[in-house]
Image (cartoon, rainbow, N blue to C red):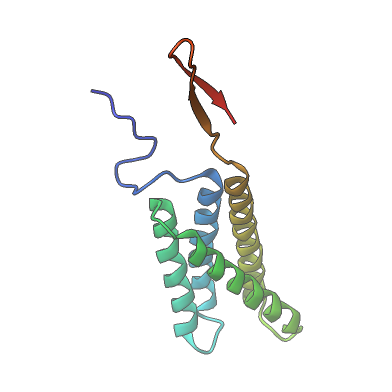
Length: 146
């Protein structure tokens, strides 16, 4: 018997291409947060951002229900925080910090854009409705797409 699954056995459901892009962005943010360890005064912040991004990337790639909403929230918060930090950063800041913030901003905006496109595609794709009507004279059901 052939399996009709369209996703891997370890996944809870199918994962769209746009969600996979968001997963790569979240994984990149988790890896990028390690560059912040040496430059921020409180390493717990960088560790927390990395851990949350990694955990959400795992949830999204597994196709767990309601996993894209928290991912979108975290991506938007990372984008906002990194863009604000980049505007505040002056010439006295380390190039490593500015580079890590720029990478975080680009990755989070790319992941957020992908999730937005996926949300729009999901809302546009409405399933077709098929109505069955029974003909009185022939006694046959006729399918009509509405």
